[in-house]
Structures are given as structure tokens and as C-alpha cells.
Amino acid sequence: MPQASDTVFSKIIRKEIPAKIVYESQTVIAFHDINPQAPVHILIIPKKPLVNISAADRGDLELLGELLLVAGEVAEQEGLSKGGYRLVVNNGRDGGQEVPHLHVHLLGGRKMTWPPG
Ligand code: AMP
Image 1 (cartoon, rainbow, N blue to C red):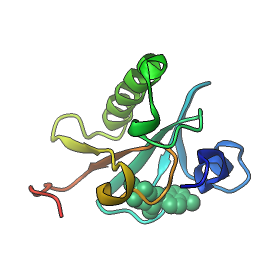
Image 2 (cartoon, helix red, strand yellow):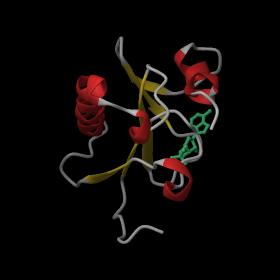
Image 3 (cartoon, helix red, strand yellow):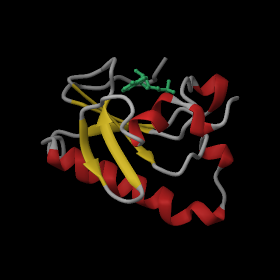
């Protein structure tokens, strides 16, 4: 797997390619997925080039917590809190991860099914 700093998400962080950004802090950025799988599909990512959960360690404790809290704040901002929403983190090949930069998918605006494919 290439280093996370090489990915399209790092280019979005550096503003080298456009994205519909809905939240940004010093450590986290959130933007609309380019290929939405639900009426609302937003990605919440750390600015730190962490490949995935498997690559995280105890030093990332605060950052990982922040990602989930921001996901909840963005969901609220998007009007999803009342009806509900789904957060997904794909990890590695079998997890269906395509972009090797940690990201939380926020999906909402429709009823989700279970189990996922
Ligand atoms: P995953 O399969 O979990 O790695 O998800 C990667 C996600 O990144 C997919 O849902 C893609 O549609 C999305 N994606 C890829 N390139 C871009 C981009 N330039 N802007 C926004 N989302 C993107």
C-alpha cells in the first residue's frame, strides 16, 4: 500500500484539487464523497497521513476520538441526527478500502440496510 501522503485525500487537504468541504480544523477535514452512496455521503479524515485503523496506535487516541465526534457534529449540521445515519470505516483490502488514508464515511438521508455487502 502506498504512503497515505500520496493519496487524493492529501491533495484535498493541501487544496491542490477541489472538494466540497463542510468542516475543517487544524487536525480534521470533512468533504462530500465524489461518488455518493446515499443522499448525504461525507468523508471525515485526519490531516495526519494515517493509512487506516491498523496503522494507528495509542498516540492517535485523541485524533481517533475527534474523528468520531466531528462525524457526529457534521451529521447534526446536515440534519441527520434525528432520523439517524451510518458511520463506516473500511480497513484494508478485505474491508473494501480503496484510498489508503484513514477516513470515516458518514452516510444518511435514506434507510440503511444490514448486513452490508
Ligand atoms: P474507501 O473505499 O473506503 O477507501 O472509500 C474511498 C472513498 O473516497 C470512495 O467512496 C470514493 O468515492 C471517495 N473518493 C475518491 N476520490 C475522491 C475525491 N477526489 N473527492 C471525494 N471523494 C473521493
